[in-house]
Length: 597
Image (tube, rainbow, N blue to C red):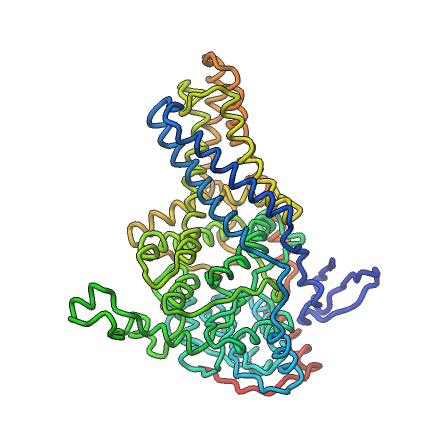
């Protein structure tokens, strides 16, 4: 559904499927149809492709690990590391996908509870909806708050304002929602949520980022799972995004996550390993309260001379700072760490693969890379300090699923290794592997062809933008590794910040690789070795590095211009307040207690 914005911003003109133009107030939540994402059921062809891919991956590893193919030892070891990261991570994802089924109907119990909640046959449990803010544009925040107010089923909505904007307090009073601000911004989003957790008492807690607009049926789709099963601590829903006319960065960031939310996360339900992704999630308050305690380790038990069957628990750092509980603090990814700690305590989690929100991805390269840096830092923590593999409270399948998180970011190491191999060959005539071309091709081509084909079979598309932004993120992810390894905390930043746009310094590593590739192409052919086929292949990959740089620069600059143009169409703060008052004057809101703390 396309829409055209006017600078007056008093109304929007909306093109309907019948091509009629209808007027809609600026703050009216978008129709449900605009949230829908054309996800397909898990295809049998995808499962067949995955099974072929697993065979092809194992077949390729037999070639890579064959010492008889070793040529230059250092280059061979580097290639071995890079290929092992790619193949093993891909095999882990594919193995996860095999367990996903879409032909299992939803339990009838959930439908009964959902219907009873809607009709009022059973009382809706108390629910607090947190809208987490940290300086986002006001109009974005208010659209989310209004949509949250219009969700079916009774609930209390709260603006958690770490940006401390007076306009948000005024908007809260106009909309009849709670308003909470802190004296400090300690622990960033985790601290913001926990500060509200101490001041509210809902049985369930919904966490929404300021730029993720919920559908009216958000609560009716999620609460039945928590009501039906008291062992479920959390229900997570997908992140889906509005990317029309937002440029390469926004589109690439969104498309790169489609398969994750469409198939990988639902498949994690089988292992009870679905984890929180920071927004669009509902927690059970009692589960978050349990995070103030943890079971003593065997070493700690021996120190205190306790028997193995003694239920000895100790207060955690979270409990010391937030005695009433809350989400995990002290991590760069509070979302996945909260999930990990809940699973360690025996709680269950559920991922519901239904589109019930619509969000915004970063539309500028700078904020996107900052986001990737912070996300990767959290992933590296799972690897370096999480103790996942040693945890006796996690099942083997849960350990594997959690380790797939850092293995995803380890792909950045592989990207760096592969980016320099072709220039090295062209300049030094040194190849990491010595094998006949046909032998290499019969092992290499099937696996890497399937890594592209499987997402295409399932999603029906492969976007160049997703590949480009993923490659652009590699240096930021490696910086996250260095920060985590040296125990330095990553800073938090707003996803759609207008600062930190595109500049060449953001892609200095890519520029270096492209220059190296150009030099290798120029000089490599002047004294190429005897193997013409290898020279042609190396030249192709070197040219690819140059092409990736050009597309990254052109696409990022265009995305910057589109973002600036979109920002210019948004209302000023005064206009936004005026429009909000207009909207409230024609709406009938449920009365709610407004607490300005």
